[in-house]
Length: 384
Image: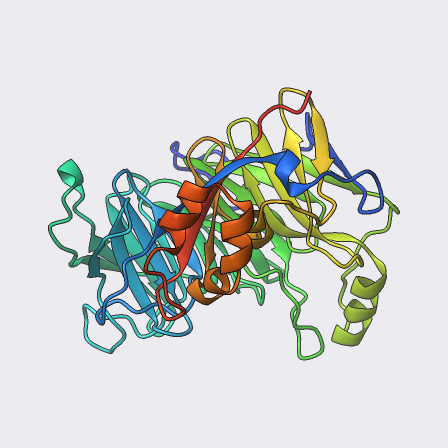
């Protein structure tokens, strides 16, 4: 539903399906080794000290000079490193003080990447923290300001400094709208410019894809949960970019009568896209759910207008860690955080099958208790 549009800075229209790119996927078709789809791998070891222990990385953010790692579940921290993985500092901490966060709901960057924004559901606020990386030197992080968040979101990105896109699977009540939309474009004062996608969340249905909003560089994408289409969104348009055609032709269906049991049965019998993807400069990579015994993903090579799928096999043992979640980095690179214990567990295989210099640098001094390793997968941009 389109809401008020009286301010000239925003002009959102109903979703457009023109010029959408069809992505054909078939888990039972010809597959390629990971080694045929990934050009190379490099790594960054995040420094481990008593001050910055990380259990699991939920989000990774990158600025020109820094890496920001978010651990929502274990340490509940936002930690800043330089590009070589050297620990610099933490941003705030868990607590109830004005410059602390009560809950790490979601973390993102302002449009110019100068500040880290923590979405705190504990008190319905957005807390902005300075990230001074001018000249490559982080001089400190501190609270810049606090904004009231007008709606409940589990996933949010900035279009401009004052305009945000938010998603919440249970929906929000908006005056004048008959349903509770899950997707909202609003300013920080609560003025809604656009809302869409009715919530079917109920005491009988609780499924969600988690984080259907994605920012890759300056571009924002939205995949309505359990939907086959990915939209690119900005303040002037809402256009379909990719639509999936998964072999079998069946689709998930949700309405007011759907229950968790109904939906589980659908998921057991249908191959479906689950919002995990990354759109890079020359390629796009998509993961989808299928009843095969390996991670199903495909690479769409833009110059060839063709999608290549994996077969679950690899020769390089470091490629076996290419699991979701994926994080965007640079033109054609995907970053995956991997626990140090998994790398140590594969030590013999890595030494035997990987480039000797890379293997020695990766494993040198590494222990199972160290912070996660960031593996940088540089995707192939041509197959033919």
